[in-house]
Every structure is written in structure tokens, then in C-alpha cells.
Length: 500
Ligand code: TXE
Image 1 (cartoon, helix red, strand yellow):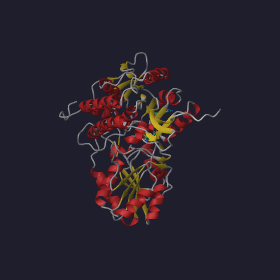
Image 2: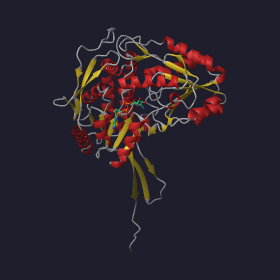
Image 3: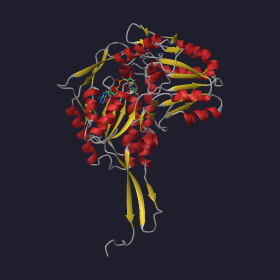
């Protein structure tokens, strides 16, 4: 797995993982195992235990014990920071291994996996500083007889349920921030992409994280995930996935212990392009925004809302760009667009492409599965002659499918951008600062890009408005989400008696 060895290939036999409990791997033993097939190669690559609801109980008990005896929350911020920094160092050292398994299970290009792992190093490094700088507030204005302090405390045992589209990145956008304030964790990765979450567990133990602070249970959402969302002893849960399951997470929280929730759900994100934009840059950005990670991004720019005077020409520019993108073996360094991660998602995307044609939209490019001799691939696809009511313009497709909607006025562009149940992300392309700021203010989205798209880093928070979710991850916002605030009132001097 040396980066220099240019001919990466899938393993000859699947790598068997255990799940992770109390500082060590637990082999599958008598449990069933799930054999994950690489979507880019069609061969089995990993074998993952199917945990039971009892395994979830054991993992939560381990995280609870680690929280209650304060082996992590009782450390000072500097000691927690040291563990997070050592984790960053080890991720950097094992980056090639992590990228390899990420690409095998997910189907994303190896160059992209490497870049994502690099981004995850930054998440741990940044969060380490926050472990030291997190603080509360004080009120010295309550008169001579009273002093007020607001402290931040960790919430307790946190559950994290992640999807298959960015298994390692989404995990690292949460875990170091959750750990910074002293919480303990039980993580459930998607059943399709568990390997890199398990590797992270091993790395954190090596970095000095006390046993029991970070546990990973593996298996399907409907059993293992469901046991977590209903659990009475998980204090807060971060869920990233479909809006449908997000709804059941909210219901389960209401029926169990009212656990605090963080939700990052679907998106149908607008890319608003004005005629006065640098159209070369915008075409590249729009192509990237829809084809990056084969469009399997909650923040992918799937609705192109473009000024009518340039709409036809701009659509062709984006199509020309996409025609040059290299679709192929995810383990090949040159590949820019990899495989579709799951069979179900492949069927969903092809279903939407057929539906778009049935509804009367016109294919500008793509529109078909690509036969590369192995794995499952779909050509980047653009639809024009789309109307706002078509399902391809309204529903999250989660694939490389772009719809073009022309507009005539700024007000119309804003209305179209907001004409969705979602509010996760949006981009605007214009050289006019007035228009750029007006759009930024009025379009409802948790993440916004001006003359770029899909950029990010540990400083800026992640999350959505409307049906795209609740709360924010990453940055100082991500640390504060996983704390609870306590108001402390300190009376000074002799008490004025209520009963004389
Ligand atoms: O998501 P699920 P799926 C969207 C996207 C995609 C669709 C379906 O539109 O086409 O969702 O993808 C766990 N209780 N997004 O089916 O099922 C599951 O095991 C608790 C957008 O894969 O929501 C996995 O770990 N957990 C999204 C996680 O939830 C349950 C990313 C997500 O899976 C559960 C992924 C249950 N009852 C898909 N059922 C984004 N916002 O990035 C499943 N899970």
C-alpha cells in the first residue's frame, strides 16, 4: 500500500474486522458477518461482524462507565489535546492504508480518498486546540452580592451514526469535536463502509485514548442503528443520512429519553450562475459540484439555476467539461469519477434518469450506465428543459445528475433556489458583489459558497436549514453542540433572610 506502488489492486482475500469495544477488537465469533463487495471491482474486500442489540448495550455500558469515572472528561484540556494531536499524527502515518480501504468499500477515486484523509488530519489538529480553549462565561454585573458563572460540560455518552458516502470524513468532522469537551462515544458506521471507522478506533487507542471512550458497533441500520436511536442511555445522537431515517430518529428520541439530536440529512442544492460570472470558472465549479464523489454528496450542487441569456451556452460548457472527466477504476491515480457505492443507489440513480426522460426533460449528456468490465458506473448526466415541478428537480437523487432551470431576474433566482424542502448548501457565481451578497443573505442554506463550491475545512461549521437537519458539526460550533450549559449563581456575603 505504498503510494509509490502505482498499481493498486483489491486484496486477494477479504480483510476480516472485529467490532471495537473497550479499547480492543472483538472478533465476529458466532455472529453473522457481512461481506462487502468493492463497487468499483465487484470482488469481496472486507468482512464485518453483524452486531446485535445486546452488543449495542455492551458498547453503551462501556462508554457510560468511561464517562462516569471521568477517565476522559476529568483530564485537563491539554491532556485531551495531546491525544487528539497524536491521533492526527498516526492518521498521517497510516493515511495510505485508510485511503485504500475507503476507496475499496466506497468506490471513490484513490486520489480523492487521500485528500479526504489529509483533511481529517486537519480536523483532529484543529479540535485539539479547541479542547484547550473551550470555556464558559461569567457575569460580574449582578451586584456586589452575586456572581454568575456559565460553565460548559460534556453531554455524556454520544452516539454517532454515519452514512456510506464519506465514511472517514464525516466521522472525523464529528469525533474530535465530540471528544474535545470530554464526551464518550459509540459509533455505528454504514454497514457498507465500516473499515475506516474501525481503523480509527485502533489509531485512537494507540494515541492514548483511554479504553471505553470510543467504541464502534457494526451492522445494519434497521437493527443496530435502531437500537442506538431508541437507547435510554445515549445522551446525544448525531445522525447523518436520509431524511426518511432522520424522521424516525426524531420519533425514537421522543419515545425514549429525549436524547439531544444532531441531524445532517438530504439536500437539493442550488448552483446559481449569473451571466456576469467568470463562466469558465463557473462551468468547472458546476461540473465538480455535481460529479465529485459521483454526486453522492449531501451538498452536491444538483440544481443549476442559470440566467436565461447564457443558459444554453453554459449548459454546453458544463457538458464539455464533464466529457473530459476520467471515469474509471477507483484505485487508478488518474481516475476522477469512481463507482456508485451501493447497488440500491445505482438503481435509484438510473431510475431517476429514466423518470426525467419520461417527464419530458431533455438529456444534454450522459444518461446511462457505463460498462467498464467490472463494478458499477454511471456517466455524468445533465437534463435541460426541466420544470420546477419535475421529480428530478425536487427530489434528492444522490448521483451525478444535474438539472438546468433558467431564470430571468434576481428575485426569480432567489425564489427558485428556495423552492425546496431542503436548505443544506448553495453556491452563487457572479462578479457583482451586490448580487453575491444579496443572494447569500436570502437563500436558505447552512453552507454557502461564492464563486466556488464544496470547499470546507475544520474552522467552518457544517449543517443545514429546513428539512436538511438540526445543529452544526465542526469548528467551535461543533464542540459547543456536544456540551451542555450550566448556570452557577454564587451569593457573596451574608444572606438576607427570608424568615426572620
Ligand atoms: O441512507 P440511510 P441510505 C440519502 C440519499 C440516499 C438515501 C438512502 O438520498 O439515496 O439517503 O441512503 C443507518 N435507525 N443520503 O439508505 O438508510 C444506516 O445503517 C438507525 C443522504 O444509505 O439513512 C447508515 O449507517 N439508523 C446522506 C445511516 O443510517 C439507521 C448520506 C444512513 O443510512 C436506520 C447518505 C434506522 N432505522 C444517504 N436505518 C447525507 N446527508 O449525506 C438506517 N440507518
